Image (cartoon, rainbow, N blue to C red; front, side):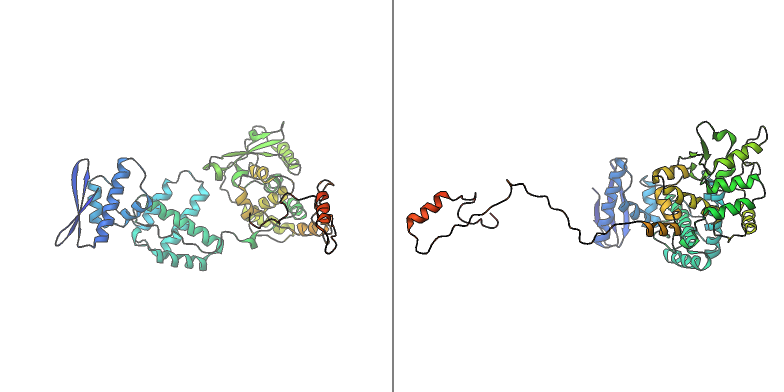
Length: 422
């Protein structure tokens, strides 16, 4: 165990590491501070000796040490040497460069979040960003962006600083616990019924656009990432299924999924197959296998040409509408398997209560429950208790009473009534 040595001008904690004596001068500190240092040194030595991960208490204690004491621990091999902190912009750039496991669209979002962080804080040293400054940044984001977008960018900022903390560039993540806005915006979630989508399909300029819209609305595919990567070799005509390649879920170990050729979708796939040239690889040739290609601008023009009201998040709401439809007929685990998401995500971002749901509720007969009572099981004749009342005349003789008792039945508890609690 580490010992404490109190001197006139300083207090030292003495520990033994591999039978070698090490001294940690703390200066003029209180007894409580010295005891805490000694206890943490013991815990640190024990966890290192047993090859255990450092506990949260020890990790926080090490992170709060000044440079001199931390350097003493690092010299003795108890902790890793601290890496000098870089500027905010340079650190995030290096982080984004190392994220080779995400899609280009995700990289663009990380870069956008980095630009806003540098715009607000400036290209300052990483360690100068405090928790209070993080709160101010979150409130500033809420003035610049929609609540759901502001919340997402706060999460990305926390992701950046969490990585810096793990690399021991900063003692704390200033964005821990910072939250602003809401994760969802229900006002932008719209159910696109089939009458509207029929008008949009009629307004599409060619078969490729009809297939894109049908894949999003009736197949539930993400557009354009999953639609663009769809190949003819992914079509399993014999089983009426097709394989979808999903860049978004690839990093979670779910790079592909199998989707039924739904009855509403099959005619558009048949049309696309009849129009395909021999040797074509991609189901949608105009996308050329480019999952990041932007289709939103042209699709909005198609919606306007169809003469229907434009809805927010055009492709996202097509996919969400399909999930809402399928949930009415199939279990959630099946629908989520086909659409490539989870039940939590579906309930949070996809499922919508529609006008037809209200109409169905009004037509449903729930029955008249008034006056109904919970039935009680009838007792059998053997279970029914009967009581015979014997009348005894006033001033009856002892022989009269004995005659009554000889023919009477006595309960199991005897003549005396049962005592409560016994």
